[in-house]
Image (tube, rainbow, N blue to C red; front, side, top):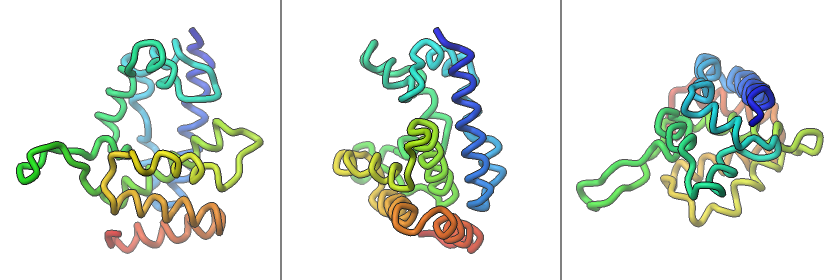
Length: 178
């Protein structure tokens, strides 16, 4: 059990996301980002399975076959594409829903911050894209949302943070959808 280390990692991650959200023009979302990680449902599982090099949810899944913390987290945080599913009366099954742009922007900020935290001094602007691509074919995400996130991650990898955050900020400010 590592509650102090887990608290420090979660808080360090949140602060990175807040800074990224400010650059993306969604500061208010950044300030509220991942507050559920401090809830009892998520925090104590995170402390129990803390390693510092990967999400504690991975350890919980290895141990139990699922992650209670993740089920709670994705159910209350709209910046996760897993939140955006619903039952389609037309298709008669659960389908992915296209995410609003502001949550795609927060998801992008979250993924970049997570790459920086988990990779530390070895971080490159390519890391978040490299993490995203291998499971692309099996990810249960709306195709337009997936394409937009990949576009942002590719832009980050090829053109850097300054240009990518400027593009994202302008897109969010325009109130246009992707």
